Each structure stands twice: as structure tokens, then as C-alpha cells.
Length: 378
Image 1 (cartoon, helix red, strand yellow):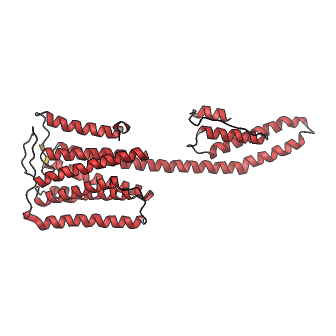
Image 2: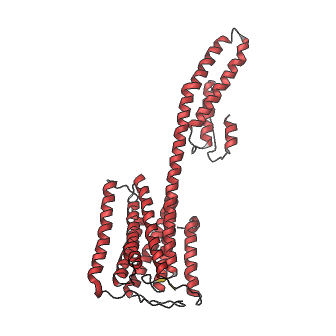
Image 3: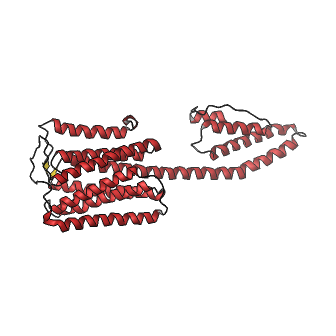
């Protein structure tokens, strides 16, 4: 996979790597702030954005069910629920970072990242029963989150403290302050997102679908966010770090990807409506005015032998019939049809009306401006 084919992915890699290097290379850079309210806002925004993105991707699944998109919806729901239930709500209620909020968020985030990677690797095949597959995925997500909450709650005081709550206000060095398991989870999640970035990028190249390119860019941001959480004090505290900014950017990119997909869907509906209206007009014109003109022309041709004054009238009727046929052809053809195909149809039809046969050799790569194409066809 070449990054030059994915400007969005290239921009995500450049921005994430630059932010990480700047923070690591400039000791005077102040990037750690103890802002519990801002932390709550970020967690809440991440949960809401992930929920909206899951809803929009679910709409894509409903239009054209594919296993990979169903798993992607499940991953986004897990991430949204983990952010909301295990991080945003406890912090909003005034609770200090606890063992439950830390380890439940650890497990939920790892599960979400693993499912995100699974979605990137899943085949594009259609489930045999799409609606049943939806219900099964919902049950799996709900059961997984409930299991995480129950296990962490049952473990309770036996769990170690995940992160020390008082890191320096302005870190100038790498500070592996979190518990070893928490740090390992950050690396594992980074690996999952890196796999997703590569897989979604390759899928975008194969299919030409920009939706997967945006998912790949989001996965890059998420991978660098987890790297920042590993190198510096962890996510699970009252402090806001560079990783939080990158993680929020990950969710925003997912939202943009889903929104672009919705816009493309509505544009497709509009194009389909336009094509259907053009075809209706073509049918009405063919069954109405064109038939009447053909009848008038036949009668005039019978009368031109006895009245030469009717010759120009017959010629005018012929031109009008030709114009109506041209309009019918223009209304009937689709906008995706190459110009050479339309030209070949017009030439063949014109020759056939005169009893002639033509042999054509046309370059399908020729591009013609709409005004020029209209003039040439006329």
C-alpha cells in the first residue's frame, strides 16, 4: 500500500507523528493539564460521536449488508458505551478515577479496538440473514459489556491502581506511570489500530471506496493516541494529554467518514430520481409528439407529388421529427454513458433511417465538453 494514493491517510500519519515527535523532542512543551471538566467533555464527545458514527454506518449496512460493516457497527457501539458508561458518567457524577472506572475502561477500549481490527479484516460477503445477524451482534455487544462490568466489579479492591493520579503539570520526559497491564493494553490497542489502518487502506485501494480510506486515517490517529498513552501518563486519570486530542480526532474522522457516506447516498437517490424523470419524459415524448410528427410526415410525403408547395413543409416535419428523436435519445441515456457510445447510437440510428449501414472505429477514451458533444450529436 502506498501512502501517496491516500492523501487523507498521509495527512493523518503526518499530523499524528508530528504531534508525538514535538511533544517528545521539546522538553519545554507543556501538554499535560489537570482539567477534570475537560476530560469529562472529551469522554462525552467521544461517546456521542461514536454513537452517531455507529448509527450512520448501520444505515450503510441496511442499504447493502456486509459482514465487515456489521462488525464495524458493533466496534463503534462498544467504544461508545465504554466511553459513556465507564468514563464519562462516573467522572460527570464527581467520582474520582477508581479501580472500576480504570479497569472497565481498559477492557472496553481493548475490546473495541480488537473489533475495529476484526472489521477491517472481515470479508465483504453478505450475511445469509442480515436482520438476524444484527440482533446477534447486538446481543454479543451487550453481553460483552455486561461481562466486563460484572467481572471488574466483582474483582473490586483486589485490582491494582491503574494510574497514579498526580502526574506533573507539565511533563518533559517519557513517564511510564501506569500499571504494567494498563501499559500493555495501550500497546495492544495500538497494534489493533495499526492493523486496521493497513487493512482498511488496502481495501480502499482495491474497491476505490473513500469510506475505507477515512476509516484507515482514523485508525492511524487512534494508534498514535494509544502510543501517547503508553509513553506518557495514561488515559485513565483526571489529566488531559496529547493522546486525548488524537483520540478525539479519531472519532471526528469516523464521523466525517459516515457523514460523507450519507451524503453520497442522498446524492445517489437524487441522481436516480433525475434519471427516472428523464426516462419518463422520453417515454411521453416518444409515445406522443414523435408519433404525431411521424404520422404528419407520412401524410405529407404522399401529398408532395401533387403539390410542390408541401415539400418544404415535409422537410420541416422531418427536421422536427429528427429533433424529437434526438431529445428522446438524450433523455434516455445515462450520465455515466461515454460520449462515443452516444455518438455511435446517433450515427447508427441516422444511417438506418436512410437505409445505410456504417462501420465505426471510435476511441473510448475521448473526452468532450457537454456543449461540444451536444453540437456534434445534432
